[in-house]
Image (cartoon, rainbow, N blue to C red; front, side, top):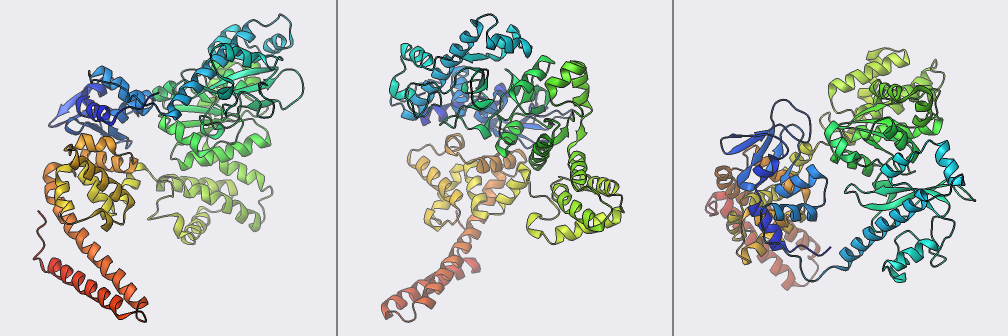
Length: 601
């Protein structure tokens, strides 16, 4: 895809009405200068979703989601930044064109999507045209993989002829040089030889629906039972899922997701009527995958791994990761059945749905399994070992009420006094001060991270300037980019400087160039709570400039003093120059502190 010019992005930011866009997804109501609605990203009865039309921003006081009109469409539709810009440009009649010079990366990405879509169709047709009573036909019947399921998941078959796919793609215009590159379809050792052969093929799609990889289950011959496409420029196993069509949309609607172990588990759940199911592609569940579920709108995640020891161990790790991401977690335990597929065969689809509804709390699952693992808990040593493993999980609970409940449960499970467990937990947290601040766990909510960022005065000042760029000229009279110690503040300084040169010093234009999510998060929250109102900024920015100038001068004096102490034995000229600088900076600081330079306008 060609590159979208900056001017188009700026025009979209200035033209597209966020009120119109948001009202497509939830009912908005005007209150004063702003609009409010029930948040489309989480369930609520009282509207806490704020829309500020003057800055084309939104912010939810309930869940902390916020951003611009472009990021709203990105998040609600789960599409890329470019796709959101293109759609808004079309909807609001913004003249649109791509830059004439395309990037190599974008052209290759489009070719990658095209070759995988064609390969998916190739495998699918091979499966649909299978010989009756062939090995693949018998396997499909054994696993009850009907034509309806084959069509829904676009399942396929990689033929035994390892050159057939190469010939098919060559005939459709793909060069040998491209097919030999790192796209994951052909052997790196033997040119033209297909990576997959005699396997049932499971297409893997990204959140936008592009086929980007495959998983293959062996049907004939030797080799591992399952193999996946290797890492490419556009696919990495720990960053995505195998899921049914429409899975991410279903998560957004229900705010719930189920994670299971494998391809057939996903299909089993789908057969039972569930779409919001995801398998982590044969690897251990990762933080990247947890983030993807959370961004997709999941509030509750049910872990549904196999009932063997390996499955329990994997479930414990997944529960820990999900809880540290502040998600509600449950665990479906299959007891005597190995996996969901076997459960459905024996108990039926409704029983599976009931099992999910009655899943155990994630923390309860962790505590129970840690205790079982430690065996006989009659000895004080065994109990001490068990609590030392349980406490890190309790520490990650996001509220005092939740932690109290977890400590009570631990005491009950260990058959010991609650007071003793609480005392040990307090001692544990006292010895680990780096892991907690003011009683809050390491895992941060977005609002906590924003609060932390705003303690940095430089960051806060320049975030304010993005909201009110016209005040930048006050700043640049007194502060230079090289004076700033914050990398983020310096980057915004350069954006504002460029906008000033181009005579486009307005909030929408500047905001379109800011890529740092922490800056955008800060601006949308402070705009929503009126801290970044025009009146406040007119008063606040001069004061921030004044305080920043004091900090800069103090830092310069300290630097010069450090150089002086190291230059005592050097030439007199260097020392004299450093002394002159120190005297100058001290005089400037005195003027500021005495008030003669207090005014910064």
